[in-house]
Amino acid sequence: MNEVINFITAFFFEAKAKFQRELSTKWVLTTVSTGAHVLLGKILQNHMLDLRIANSKLFWRALAMLQRFSGQSKARCIESLLQVIHFPQPLSDDVRAAPISCHVQVAHEKEKVIPTALLSILLRCSITEAEARLAAAPSVCEVVRSVLSGSGQKCSMQTLGDPTACGALT
Image (cartoon, rainbow, N blue to C red; front, side, top):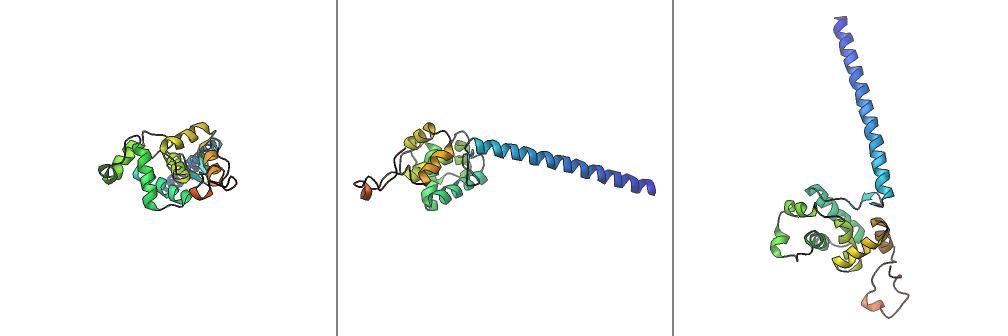
């Protein structure tokens, strides 16, 4: 009986030690990965802004980020997200009505979908203009932070006559 108890004790002790090693390794790798993404300018307010939309969960996360950072309605954010995903093809009613899995399949092949959609919403600009801003910026989050702080916003018709009303265009 003692042999069985010793075997079970040794087994659980070894399993616990293995689990702790694996968990420690996971924490180290997560820390390194997160640090790399921060240094690359892909993290904005603890959100991975520049993620690849590879499944429906990430599609809905992208939509939530667009709503959070733009303050726009869900409908407006979906429209912008779908426009970027399917660009340069114009959005038809059939494309809008397609299942999320179809949008995910197209989005998975593209880069900077979320930041492009966000800039398009915030600046009220075309996808091409948003892509150009992203291409010219040192990092995705730097250009988005600039726009969110007001130094990259397009002027509205009411403020066009007042040069101090809008931040300097970058």
